[in-house]
Image (cartoon, rainbow, N blue to C red):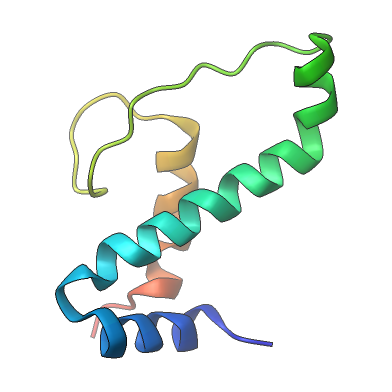
Length: 84
């Protein structure tokens, strides 16, 4: 099983400048996969509250409206890019 740190190291080695955006996109997809597994059927059938889609910033260093994904990203960002 690949850890988040190993994935981040691979991304930095392969994509260099684009690594941060690449990892951000992976986290975005992982977040929505989890949301869809938990609430997808209900959202599809309209039995649960709708999801408000807020346009996400290009990077998380952003001072605008905070969506559910931005909150999620801030909890896992340190696993991808630990501060050294």
